Image (cartoon, rainbow, N blue to C red; front, side, top):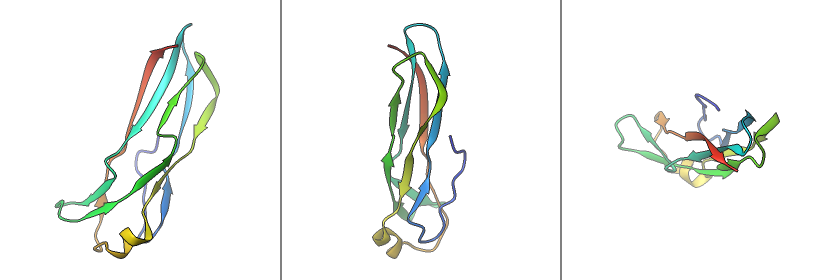
Length: 104
């Protein structure tokens, strides 16, 4: 899971993918979800930059053991139109990766 990801001015996308590996007990599996509000904001919150996520925003293992790690492709995208209307500032946003152990 990426701790920080830089997206430079006019860059259309950034890799925010993750890998899943698990070694759990019988009848258990790992589940991962990625949540986001689709908006990065300037420090004062006055300006926003919209984005979308494409790819694996959810993963649920089908067995207790996932090995080797299963790579999950996920991309953060900012449209050319969003960049064209963006004020030149630093924007910050949060993606929340949640992992849980669930019943099979």
